[in-house]
Image 1 (cartoon, protein in one colour):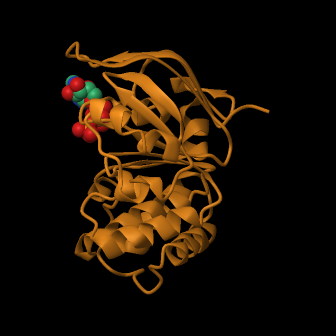
Image 2 (image 1 turned 45 degrees about the vertical axis):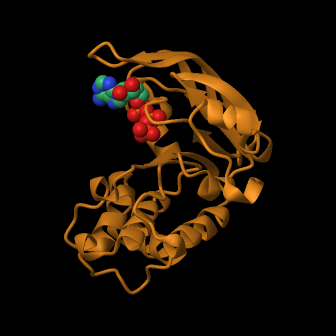
Length: 240
Ligand SMILES: Nc1ncnc2c1ncn2[C@@H]1O[C@H](COP(=O)(O)OP(=O)(O)OP(=O)(O)O)[C@@H](O)[C@H]1O
């Protein structure tokens, strides 16, 4: 059976010549929860962009066995749901329900089916009752949950998230941990907040300078103070 994600010899340099990913090899199984950690500028967001086929890279990335090439983009978009760092990039309709139904409608579901999928996704993230609310009037935590719903409504088997805890207070973080831990999906999250990330994933991939430095059990990696500190990171208090 094909892996959820299979990355071989991945390299990427931005058009302004900034090298961002160097020779990445990574394989992620179905149902795995993986956090991509590393200091600012390590290449975490770029790696998520490469996985989601948002940038054209050198090397190979396949998603559920589908090669990550522009000709397969529609298929890839059905399999991977990408939650961006800023929820405002994902919420742009006047009513929340229309935002959440947008993806399923785009995938070819009938308006009734799309509405059902949107309602179910809002319920999953605890936003039932907010259907007619203007998305930009939601709180930061509600926006984050809504951005997740806008992905869940398309039923992807893989979800990527970039720094999903930014702007969240402790209660918002706890709710997000609960929500993500209740999802039966492959989840790949990039971030810098070790305490938050350690509660979601069983595996951590540490990248720095665009390359993989360590890959393994989240507790083993995050509790290794020499490793963490030498890459500008801190051991989370739950692993001290
Ligand atoms: N659009 C871009 N054009 C040129 N260089 C970029 C662009 N986006 C990112 N970079 C550069 O690519 C490298 C990797 O950046 P990336 O955003 O992937 O890092 P990151 O690990 O997600 O960082 P952070 O934790 O600060 O979000 C950095 O050197 C960054 O300056």
